Length: 288
Picture 1 (cartoon, helix red, strand yellow):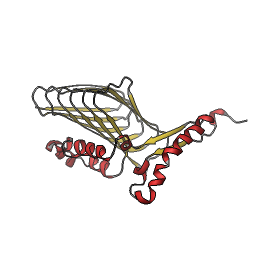
Picture 2: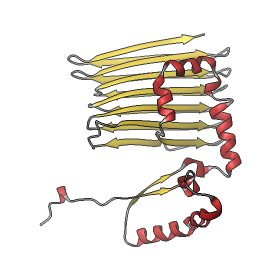
Picture 3: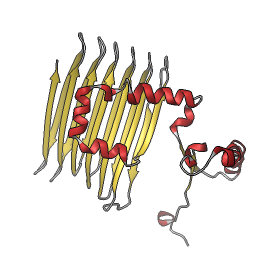
Picture 4: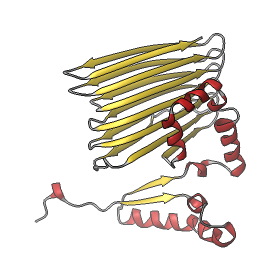
């Protein structure tokens, strides 16, 4: 008799990539027909899954959400190069001094692209969950989240990180908020055996607001850097964080609010609840 508590699991995980998945190894003229066949095979697969009540996980390349290559190219040029946070000289100097940002960007990180178009209100929170129970202590993981918020957007994004075993992580979140938008970014993490470097880069345009709510519980050792640029008139950022630490936990928080324009607003509110020999460091500055 099989004990249900210890029953094995067989997981089906599928990647929806189209030509992005073979961009470096195939050419359209001799592989394009295979890619086009995806549009027939996926409905057939879903039909079989539905018939036999099979559950599967799907990973979708963010570039597929673009209407065409021109839109993808426009997003990259507008938000990643010429007009992005990297055009800010102060931020560029920060990146030079912080090698972990460069390491993350150059080493093919596991990444997520979120693109919320103009005039969108997202009623339910967008949830991003990172979780592992595997012992990957010999691996240095690069996680990257790239978020583009259009004009007149109202949304809440929740990141949930849970790592049970020992591992080493280099994380990067890049957030670009266009005009007249509001975003709540809630970050929840519980990583009692994890050593992590976390960097956050953000550009906020006029009349837009970012509410940051990081919550870290029982973390082994984490260095967190937040670099926020208030580039538009009436832009604002509210940072409210909580650290619940125990035993030999250690966390170091650094927050930089760069007021690049007149009539910008920022606030910081941080709480450490420490037990035993845990350490919590908090440093914040506003450049006006």
